[in-house]
Amino acid sequence: MKNNKKLNNYNWAIVKTIAFFDMFDYPLTVSEIENWTLKSDNQKSISQQIFFSIIDFRNGYYFIKNRQNIIFIRENRYKYAKKKYKIAKRISKIFKIFPWIKMIAVCNAIGNYNLRKNGDIDLFIITSKNRLWLTKFFTTLITIILLKRPKQQGSLDDIDKKIDANKDKICLSFFITEDNLDLRKIALKKQNDLYICYWLINLKLIYNKDNTYQKLIRENQWINKIISGLPHISNSYQYNNNYTKNNVFCNFLEKIVKKIQLKIMIKNIGNIMNKNTNVIVTDKILKLHINDRREYYLKKFKDKVLELEKISSHNT
Image (cartoon, rainbow, N blue to C red; front, side):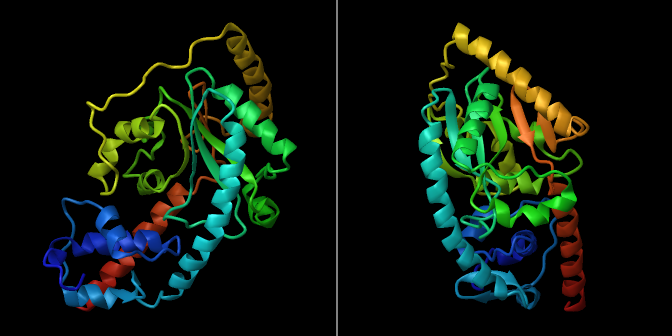
């Protein structure tokens, strides 16, 4: 990278990208930097000398100066993640018996294989149209039977106490339907939602039916205006757009299980449902992230960038 002639044209964007992943203790390789660098029309330009007074390189990774310890963290999390993905694959084999499940992916790992040892396993599931509530009901039931359902989060103060108890449990907190794939509606409105961008890029796909993953990527090409790295899916790509045929009994069952689950949700989280993009409950999306930390990470990221700007100015 030191010999890259393009560096002076976009090195501040590289610094910001490394700073973002630093929040998740995740140093970046050259290929990751090339694929995930933030885009900006008004980005600063800093010299190579200043760049390398802020950024260090070791063992194939770039990271913020004096943060070499995160190399060890990343490599250990890789080992944990491989085990967790095996667990996710095993339970997904059961989920796949339901014909209306179109895609399953491990999510909430910002950076490939960046899952914590004591963390649970977050699954992102895409369903057929009008089968969201059935999917939530039966997948939850399976995790209960298999003793894989995590304890309810409750108040934010209780979360840290439940981390160990929820190790390797299956968290089912994000479902969308195949006719509702554009994620802009759940993105933070005030500014670019970097978290959701990198969240999508780093989905670990487990099951993909009827090219649903490709549809998801095509519907979210807007992300390539913010960062690089999202595969381009042509609009001319041919998909099977035949949604699961309506079944009278399943339609009836969908209404029943919706009523049951909605009653429970209103009791437990009714005060925060559909107030913002953290907890969304509709027939097309169930996003149950009580502890959605995107605002926190955005503020932390901005503070880190300001800190690095001061360092670069001091070294000018």
